[in-house]
Amino acid sequence: MSLPSFARVAAPADPILGLAEAYRNDPRPNKVNLSAGVFVDETGKTPMLATVIEAERRLADAATTKLYRPIDGEAAYRELVRQLVLGPEHEAVVSGRALATQTPGGTGGLRVAADLLRQTGASETLWMSEPTWPNHPQMFHAAGFKVRTYPYTDATGRRIDAEATLAVLGEASPGDIVLLHGACHNPTGVDPSPELWRRLGDLIEERRLLPIVDLAYQGFGDGLREDAAGLLELVRPGAELLVSTSFSKTFSLYSERVGAMLVIARSAADADAVQSHVKFAIRVNYSNPPAHGADIVRTVLADAELRPRWEVELAAMRARIKDNRRAVVGALEARHIPGDWSGIATQRGMFALLGLSTGQVARLREEHGVYVVGKGRINVAGFTAANLDPFADALAAVVASGA
Picture 1 (cartoon, rainbow, N blue to C red):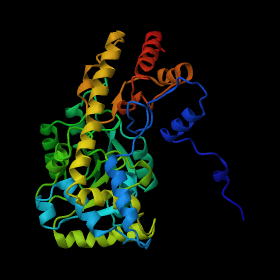
Picture 2: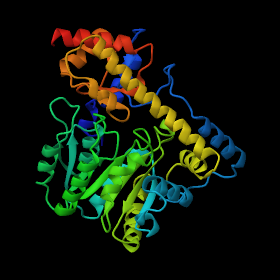
Picture 3: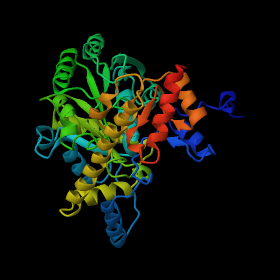
């Protein structure tokens, strides 16, 4: 016997992680990496938060065992995450119809949600925005869904086309699943207005759709509660949905892979029943979650001293991203690069979409050593005083050529 012949043909590189590898192998000293979604400080380094360091010290001092954790994670972590996402006084929390499960990052949360739905007989059709995070279609295709798309932005890529979004989602069949970005839309940085969130909630209720909300950046937009406002518009009395959240960015815990998946059901009894299927999905996948990252998050969120300090650190990261957005707009406008770039300053989160052609993206990389994703998604959190001007100069040159 031998491996399948198809296994001997190299798979295409991941559209984001493959670029990161190409960047690492690029020998040019002035190369610029704006492809990976990681926060960096002014020195270009991804820092460890002081509260995380303190939490790790406390955990090391108190450590006595490395036993398995429960399939769905430690109870204290799950409760703290549930309250962080929805608010401690929310009806879905108080009633017990919302339950959280620890997962390996937000990606793990999405995959657990996908497996849960497929194994319990949900619709095979899942709708996602165009554009979206490049791993979304790959993940849900791999889980066995038939992926369809709804339009999200207009031709500029920097404004939502609300009517087009609602018109296409209005064609979805009852029971279909719709994937929504809870805040800091990746890759555009453009989020629905409160009015559009209400209209989406009305449409979902009317068409009897099942939402999955990807809330990977809660706190990176305008604040912890502010960034949950769209999600909370969907959590209406009796409404059911799934939520995936991540602490990679907001705790700078990229390598620890810590996140959660929340099930919000009609009742506490239904939530308990669904949770049994969640555990089954996890058991046949990775069996038990890793402990360290979740212990850090639990320690910080539960501590009266560490939690407010973490919120200050989070606010500082958020402020740096907003400052970078304004700086990017200033740099592009100073070079008179054609187009209206002003919207980048008011978008939210780590990403902005430049709306470039594949040829322009290739030229940025090949001629200037500037790495961006897809149609020109840039990580705004990746700019420093050292790389902003080289990026802007390269973009001006590429756009001027018209290629």
